[in-house]
Image 1 (cartoon, rainbow, N blue to C red):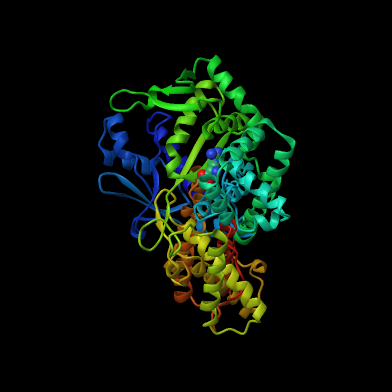
Image 2 (image 1 turned 90 degrees about the vertical axis):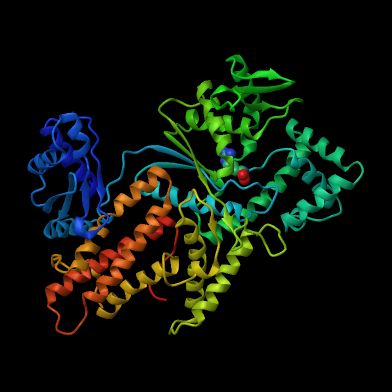
Length: 578
Ligand code: ARG
């Protein structure tokens, strides 16, 4: 149980004891300023109406009833009836000791759920571009954290490997192979390949017809056409894997469940929607009219599941995917990470899917939208010439830039070590810049801020971690071997201690809301509090009392482990020195 949960439990018991109904809310929150203690209970005001007593009287009764002996050093009533909780240093020390003795820093796993996470999901017709950076990085952090908390996580890379644009691509590829090129060479640059195919489609006589012919063949499962398609897909997946590897994300081929995988189920989906009277024919197409999402004039939203002429859509595939995940994968939760522009699509899909019973009432369908990555001009991030930025190139640039920056620092490390550090810092900076922003808002991509050693950045946190490690190197001690108890004396020690014990709160918020930025801010606080602690509380200074030194060393060791655990979950690599 973390501090927050413990206080919730204690205050719940207290308010029930003074006559509040069992299901009353228990509003515990973190205090905003150290002089208000660490936590606050804000429930007295609401209870005063219910119990018809003055809020301050209620607050006094709660303070009387709440059993926080040995946990809180002081409870005080402030303002109209807030109860401020000041945590006791001895109790904090014992909690820290427990964390220090545990391989998981004392963090308990959650009740296991099966969680499907649909992320990355690039379109294979093209190269991965910056638009896929956020879903890939945020998704991977969410997945790792859910696993850490004991959940069964099923990654689903819903790759866009199907659809009409493949007709034109396959027609073009077939010509290239005809002229003796191998697929790898022909598709070495998917961007160029796509453009060539598009030009031919728009301009070359007869090509568009051939392209359409390929679509029909592909949908009909024609063997030659499928073989060609498979070659295209394989090369394109290899391109994505190159990006995954550079980004150090955990997706593998086994996680791919592309749009094509649902192809055979699409007719069933539409058939069932029709049977149930949910989809109806409209101008030759099969559509669902959504009264729930009617416009101001009362016209229902139109959700098409089959086009005139029989073609299926992105939406049809998502309905099939929803059903597969809830019935075959038994997902308790499904999380889908895409940019915010798809929010309406997923809202509609959920309504239709629930009506059709494709997902159970107890199963969630959570679209986790994110904002766009903007250039420093505030417009969508583009190359100088206005093209889309290829992810591979962006990541290479990150490493080049961090190499230049790190070269300016004094160091006695070997060239190989320095190159490795530059890679971790460069990639870490790009990932962290993305993770640390509230995912729902747009954010500005800026090399200088993300690579800075100050502020809420990867280099700052990586550096803080090396600072901790250097203490132990200097002292030639293994931090986990210290047997002496922790004793908190200085204000900086107290603040750092409380923060270290809040890791599980940050993690829980991340897994509930798919918001890695919460963990980023937390780690940034840990690093900053550690720096203040380190300045105010000497550790290795001559003449320092042995027990004080050991207590501080344990605090430092816990700080290091907390930073490392958090950064690992976020997918940010650390190093021992830099
Ligand atoms: N391929 C889509 C895109 O690049 C994202 C797919 C997201 N997942 C889904 N189930 N629709 O925009």
